Image 1 (cartoon, rainbow, N blue to C red):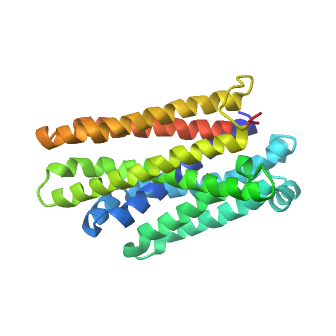
Image 2: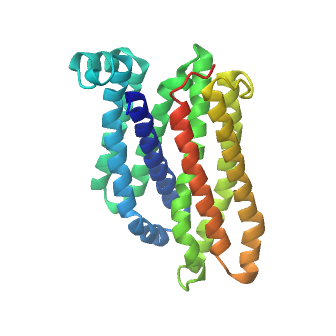
Length: 292
């Protein structure tokens, strides 16, 4: 395995873990009743613990891997002078310091009172996602255009993360639609997710189009660049996710009101999660490539 491949894997793990934490924590804290949020949060506690560990571990690995890529490969992985130079003299190093601080704060949320834990995790995960705009393609422009690009990328990351990450607790809430006491809270939580989902998907699409224009100046069309080929695949997958979400909301939800079967709803949500993971993997990959 080369340092470049290892970096892509670390980016994938980091992005997936932080998106899960951000989306699920923000959803449970803002749109779900306290009792239901507590019950779902307890069931997700092990997954959140794993995600936080992955976020911290992958963050720790990213700087040495960046150093190895900039330097002469694996021999420079733990060279103190090289690591210090990359950390203090490059955009990726400065972004990494913000990321490292966010990862430490995320780990510290384990010591927060349970009433504030979801909100604390949401804030820290949002900071980690925004740290990704400090380097890479979001920082490729200069002047006011760099600021515009960073703000747009931040909107894209937060809205996409809110959509994808919330799908996991939604999967746990769906079966509660047919259970006595939690049924009303579950129905309200899913209605709120649907409303917020419309906003999130709209922001994802608009900010995604803007990002493409800011990076390429148009749609991906030069297939000699791997970046543009992978971006085109990502666009197709996102469109497929949107179609599934629309079918779920406007076909299967009305059918549920008549037949009370959550299976089609769960199948659609699982499909969105799988496609979302594929999108995250593609972004982790082409985020390391030259766009043109």
